[in-house]
Image (tube, rainbow, N blue to C red; front, top):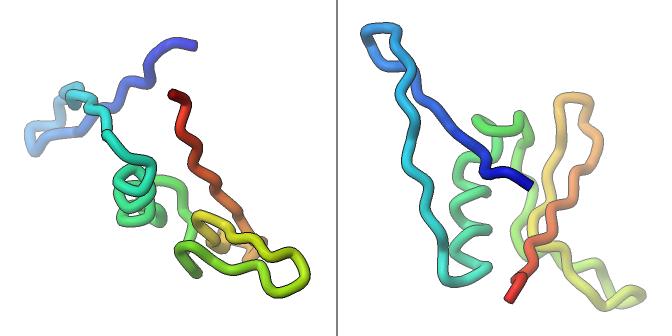
Length: 80
C-alpha cells in the first residue's frame, strides 16, 4: 500500500503537501482522529472507548454517526 498524501489549500489558492508523522501509541492516534472526525470523514463522535455492555463485555474504540445517522465503528490496532 502506498503512503497517503494530504494537501492543504493556502490563501493563495495553491495546494501544499502536509508532512506526515507517526505516533508512538494507539491511544495518541485515536485522540488525533477523534479530534478531526467530523471534518475528515463527516462522522459525528458519539463516544470514545464505548462499552458494549454486560452481554458482550467489550468496548469500541470510537463510535460515531454518519450523515444518515448510521453507526460507524472505528477500531485502532497496533501493528508491531
